[in-house]
Image (cartoon, rainbow over all chains, first blue to last red; front, top):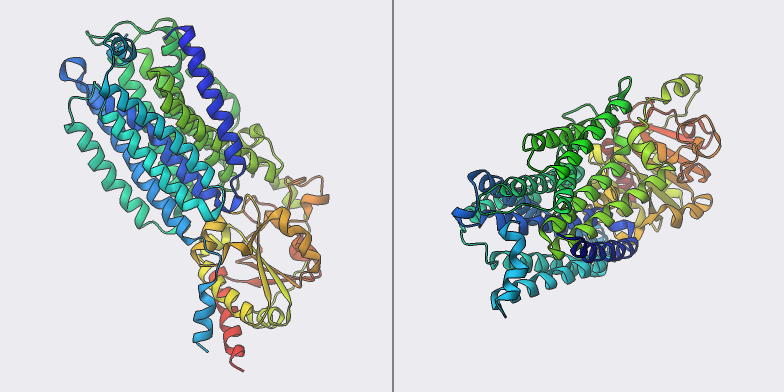
Length: 108
Length: 482
């Protein structure tokens, strides 16, 4: 990486960070827990890098790198699968109407 | 340079490359999806849609990675996918909602681990015969990546241990703690600098890993349970930043963007948490809460409290027009949220206006109480933030405190000697009647005596939150038949 590359990547980083700050500020405190599990799933994007390490041709890689890459793919996949699933499970629970009201009346 | 990093140049020279083009498009698509996902998450109505677009983005990114020219072997990738799925699905499906903070800490640990391992693999791949020398800028980001990754890994495991009660939740402090922490962080940074200057010093790399991992452990040792929301948010931010640093190493914009979004999210949340406690980052991380209180608590003389019974509580609430419930970590521990729902139903049926006042740091992670109450099917429009509801307390008949403590302590307003002085609180004491459910008169989590309990308008309901609320709900149900 030369300094020219660096500054272009740094622009991307800065813009994404500011965009993130603005978007996240608007998230209702009601949803801060799902927000955290969703961003956690998103940060498992490192799976992309882990996949590229695991998939290197035998002549281009070492056993150590493959082992580390495989564990990294597993760890990131855990976060992707688990993260999105539990976020959905949580979000499903947030409802406005009160279904319990009907149940209460029925029990009368 | 490693072949990984040569990708862009060689392909450009070879003319149009469909495979690379598709890969780039999927990465771009993934980045757009992630931004949209966070945007849609802002309101409950669009939130599930947001999660879905996040999933689509991740699927696109994985497909993009699998299409890469370098990926020629798939057996280990499949093994990784399989293992991750086998661990991830049960963690998401069978985990009770009360354990969300632990699970979040654990997933931060996985995120940190992945980043640290990828960084380590890249470092050692630099020495592979087909690879060329790396640049010092790349090395700089690689060191940051493994530093953040490994400290997030061990720090989150520590947080997990504390939240899961595997480790003592009280702050663990010793003399010169901050000094030792700074020295270790300093040593880790020095070893990073050495590696940037001379990347071939291979023995320095494990040293860097070890120091960063130790710093993660030591950083969380003095953190008490009440500070967990801030710390979890901060670890969330670190996990994101390490992914972003990985993006710099690989010159991959998708990684940079997704990591920056996550880093920003964790930062915003930890700032919100700090503000809600009127404390600074440095104070949370190095202040070792829990310590100061010994003297403050001792100064309080024995005073009397008025205790009451669930029957009386039920009668008072039945006669009330408005009730505000203030849930805290105690509700989560006692798993009382479903009993709270029963009580809520009984009162609502009688036309009593029941609302919930949620303090930003109630519980062990941001939004913890909201998720528990939503799980118990309490409509989310009844869950109000501190600023929205504080004006309602003077008109409210009953403020019912369920397992909360410091967030309703009026000492935060006027007692300059109190460790929580200046912290924004819920004005429960302004309600006509305050009822507080507590197991014993022992001071709360931060070890601070709560003067609210000695106020004239306060009734104490001693017992486990689940049992007490259950008894109140039962009482209401019985009298409701008349």
